[in-house]
Amino acid sequence: MTRLVVAGAGAIGRRHLAHIDAHPDLHVAALIDPNPATSELTQAPRFDSLADCGEDADGIVIATPTQDHEATFAEAARRGWHALIEKPLAPDLASVDRMIAAAEAAGVHILTGHHRRFHPKVTALKAILDAGTIGQPVVATSIWNVRKPDGYFDVGWRKGRDGAPVHMNVSHEVDLLRFLFGEITRVAGLGGNPVRQEARVESGAAVLGFASGLTASVTFADTTPSPWGFEHGTGENPNIAHTGQDSLRISGTRGAVEFPSLRVWTGAYDWSEAPVPQEHPSGDGTPLILQLEHFARVIAGAEGPLNDARSGRATIAATLDIERATWPEGVPA
Figure (cartoon, rainbow, N blue to C red):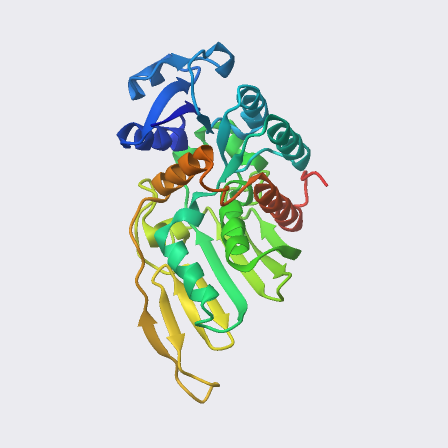
């Protein structure tokens, strides 16, 4: 039984809490949240802050607001707890560097919470690419176009930079592309705010250059009720409608693949021949649960983190580059 403290009972924290409570090999040791009403979410004891918590645990899931991650992790590391920290790890690279140093000093692991890496369809997609089924990947196109509900912006900070889709959502696209294709070396982009006209980028596009030579484009918007986006396509988020539509297309020297349908197009040598489609299977499983199970194995020393703090840092660095390219006003250098 792996004993986990959950810090933060917001939308994602509550999902973690429910999955841990329901898992036969995981146990909620405590909930950290200043709202007394969250006590109803679990039978575990609730504390206003981690400093108040005297419960024993093996690790912690940190799902507090991003600006609180560093301080919460510092206290957890002092106790020798490994940490699964929701993305982004911190608001800036200096904070992440301090967290990495604290983890190394305490001898604990950080697992960055980009849970898409654990999606069975992502696992199948990476296997297709690694097997060379479409040859050398050359270009990729990713779409994340949604319309966030009006009530989403009742929380004031979401109207600004910290709630903009690059910071909140495109970071997931970046991490997925890094997982599939390696490190990003160049970034360009354009963005705007033509609909809500708040002091934030709400839609735009980024072009990413990878060390492998692959080029990927990411278009994003939180102002359109389109059917195209990772969550729309996979149905993995219960708060976002499932359309089953593909949002990622990858072209290689021997064919192409669409995601999440895993429709692979092969058999054509050049444009005079028509490629033939074939849909590939994938396994089953809930990404957040699979990530928690991986975290338990990391705590036990059976595995290293699939997405450690240095990888999380690289995703933040690329995301900040996209922010500067698409919305240079007010974005720190």
